[in-house]
Amino acid sequence: MTKLLNYGLITLIILLLIGGCSTMSQKVDPIAEKAKIEQVIKNSIRWALTKDTVMSYSCFALDSSLFWFSPDNAGTISGAESFKSLTEQIFMNPAFKAVSSEFKDLRINLSNSGDCAWWSCYLDDFNEWNGQPANWTNVRWTGVLEKIDGAWKIRQMHFSHALEDFQKKSEP
Image (cartoon, rainbow, N blue to C red; front, side):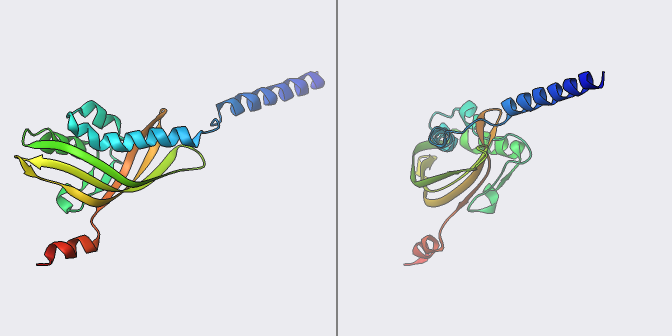
């Protein structure tokens, strides 16, 4: 009877190990994942060309952890509700028109586990407000994404202008 219990226990342990191994993260293809991440990063800006809020919202972790710093404090976002409010009040406003965007020196890094990534680039985001230019040029943009239920979502971002850009604006 003891031998039967021991064999049963050993069999149970082996089955648990096999089952546990099958649920471990699979080998990540970094090239394919980086291509998906790049698409999310670009869609998070380019959705505004067609005012496709479904595309926009699909790029972000829509919970209280969503956060980003903007070059000015008025644009800083904390939480999904603030983000949705900004989207509705500014980007969906008829006075706003997205024109184009460029992502220069885009660098994407992937964690060893394959479920976290971070990026940096210089962003040129060309827009109009009431027909007048409302552009961000050469803005430094960094961020962090997490893979949630198989999809990459932005959790945090930071936009800033280089000090040199401010100094150029103040020169006569």
